[in-house]
Length: 84
Picture 1 (cartoon, rainbow, N blue to C red):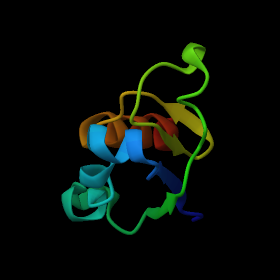
Picture 2 (cartoon, helix red, strand yellow):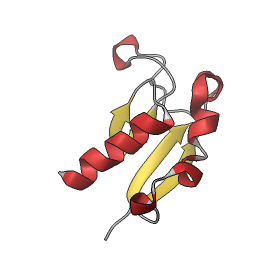
Picture 3 (tube, helix red, strand yellow):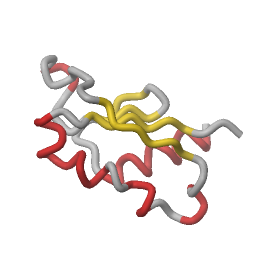
Picture 4 (tube, rainbow, N blue to C red):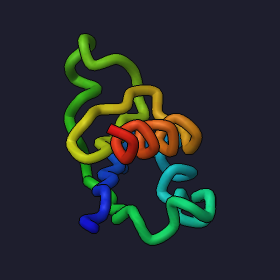
């Protein structure tokens, strides 16, 4: 099974708004999701420059944008993708 790629924006705005906490998501994954994700930090997704994208922090989960991301909203998105 291919892993779900989680790309977390670590630009200043995103980092301050919570991306630093999301970077530790692997430590907070429920048992059934462990080993199913690959986490990477991206210098900047440049989404904060486009107000139509919403608010920081931004995370891409298998290429799908999660705005105002939290550990829980990213886990929810992972589950949605796995159940599709």
